[in-house]
Image (cartoon, rainbow, N blue to C red):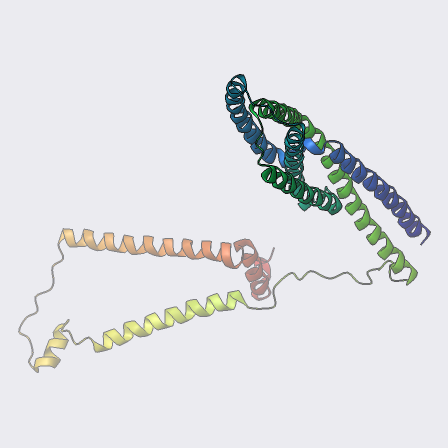
Length: 351
């Protein structure tokens, strides 16, 4: 009982150690995901699509900048300070809105997997809504004043927007380039975690078995059993009696064959001898011509007899083989026959 209790206590200590290691491993995985949130392999598809969109937007901005430069070189009208301020505010709010929307798109897949708190997404949604209101308000003020930015201001805004897009594209390229190394390190952490979890499950199973053994010993249900009497192996089957079945089958077959031969002989009315002819016609024959057997017929008759003998011998061999393989080995059958015949033999024939 002491040994079972010591075993249970050992597994309990080991299970507690593994629980602490599992918690530490989970914390390491969570911290690593937080530190490398922008380079996690789960969002690489979204980042590649966003990088493609930014590249297209940068190309479009390049074309717009060329047109704005051409317009700025030929512009003569000036813009008031209030109008410039509104234009800058509008551009700033649009950049903020684009940044919030982009971050919301990147964090949505992580929210579904539990890597990002719902509070972060709610804050982003409020920021997006506020930016939309600010943009709408600035556009309304500009519409009331009949304002449209001059080419020089528009050129400056386009260059600022392009620089912002290029910065974000560079960040995405860096995160995509870091994804393979992050994936390898994350896979190593997850593999270590899986090994710890498997070891934890095995230890928990062993603890359960140890506790069951301890309870059995406490209830005195784990005592040793002693065999009082060994089981005896029978030397012969009780039934069916295969020898009797084979003998009955052989005897019955021979009896049926003999009865069939007698029946056919009784039913055969052929004339074979002079007596049969006399009984059939009520006339005495003057002379009887005997049947002369030719040499070919004698050879054929002897071959027929030899064939019958061979068939009988092959049948005996086949029956013996079947009895030996599927009924009883011939040596055992011979021993049983000898044991039954020996009491009836004379003394000089016994070994």
